[in-house]
Length: 590
Image (cartoon, rainbow, N blue to C red; front, side, top):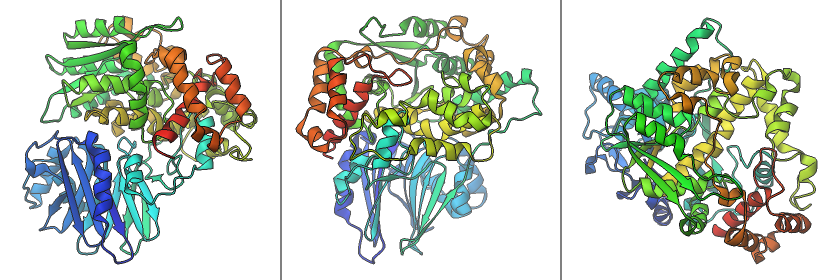
C-alpha cells in the first residue's frame, strides 16, 4: 500500500519534476517508509512507500526494469503474486526482488493490458513503456484503490488523492454542479469519473486506460459481474459456496511480510472474518474495536458483541474508547484526510480507530462490502416485489436523500440544475441488461458505484491517513461474482444477508448472527450539540460559505435553529451533510 503520483506531457516538453515533488508530501501518510521519483522525458512518476511485501530496498518504487524497458508506480497488493511469479519464471523471467510490484512489471510485459485480469487483489498503477512512450493506467475491479486525474492543456497528472493534485497546481477548482446534485441527492455519492471539483476526475473501477504520447487514449472496462441468477445451484447449496469463497478470500488477504490484524466491529461481517482465520489456524490474532461516549439517548459502542467474538476465538483484543477530549479534534483531521467530501460519521470512527491500530500493526482485514453484495441494507426489501418498470422510482424513494422538488427549496437557484441528474444516472444503470430483478439492479448499482465512492473510499482514506493498509475480503472479485449470481430471495432472507447468516451458523456465535444490524455509532455527529454544533455553525456562516452561496440562507438558518430534527431519507442529519461539504471545501481552499 502506497501513494502514487505522476505527470504525462503530450507537447514534447519534459515532465515537471517540481509538480511531482509538490504532490509527494500530500501522500506521505500513505507511504511513511520511503520516497522515490523517476523522470524520463515527458513522463515523471513519484511514490511514497508503505513496506508490506519485500521490506528490502529492492521493493522500492518507482520500479524500473531496464531489461524490459518498463517503469511502474503501484498502490495496492496482488494477493496471488507468488503464484504469478512462479508462472512467469517458467517463461524465463528473472526477478531481482520478492515484491508484488515486480510481478506486475513482468506480467504486463508478458500479457499486456490483459495482465489485470490475472491479478487477485486491489491496485491502482501506472506503467511506462520506454520504447514507445505509452503509459497504461489501471484500477482494480471494485475500485478499492483510488486514482485521481487532472488534465490541463498538454498534460495529464494522476495521484492517489485529490489534495495531491491540488498541491501540484494548475487545477480548475470550481465546483462541478452535477456532482453537487449527486452529493445532495445520491446519498453524498459522486459517481466516477466526476468529483465535486471540475478540474479533477477519477479513473473508474475495472478500467484500463492506455495513453499514447500524443495524448489520445483508449479505455477498456475489463470486468463486470453478472447479476443474472444461476439456476444450476440448488438453494440449499448456496451457504456452503459462500462460506468456501469467503474462507479463500480471507486466507488470500493474510499474504504479507508483516503481521495482519482485524477490525472487529461486533457485526456478523467482521466476526465471520475472525472466525474463519481461527478456523484456518491463526493463533494470537490481534483485533480492534472502537466505541464513543453515548449521546442523544444513543449508545456509542457495540463492545458487548465484539467481546463475545474476541473471547470465543481467543484474540488479542483492543477496546478503543473515545472520549470527548479526542473526538472534537479528530473532526478537522478527518475532514483533512478526505479526498472527497464524505458525509458518513463512520469516517471519524475509522480515523480514530486507524490512529490507534497503526501503533500495533500495519495491515488489517475489514468487513466492508458484505451489505452491498449480499443485500444487508434496509432499502433492498422494499424492492423485492416491485416490477422492473417501477424499480427506478422505488429505489429513489428508498435511497435518495431527498426528492428533486425538495432539493429545489434547499440549493440556491444559481447552483440548482433543472434536471434530476441522480435519477437519470440510476435510470441509465437500471436500463442496462444483466440484472434480473429490481433488487438485482440495485445491488449491481450499489456494488459498482455507491460501495466504491462511500464505504470503500472511506476506509481507504481514513486508514491510509495513518499508514495502515486495509484489506476487504468481501470484495474478493470471485466472491462478488458468486454473490451477484445468487438468487435475491436468498440474500434478502432473515432480515438481509440471509445466505451469509446461514453460512456463518455454527462458525460465528449465534448472538452475533441474530442481533439487530448495527452501524458505527458516533452520537456526536448524529446528535449535534455544544462545541460540535458551534463548529458546524462556524463552517456554514463563514465568509467563504456566504460568498459561495450553495444553500438557501433560510434553509441553513432553519437547520441551525433545530439541528437534529431534519433527516435525510435514510436518517442522516441534514445539517451535518451541509456542514461537512463546507468544511471540506474550506479545508481544501476551494
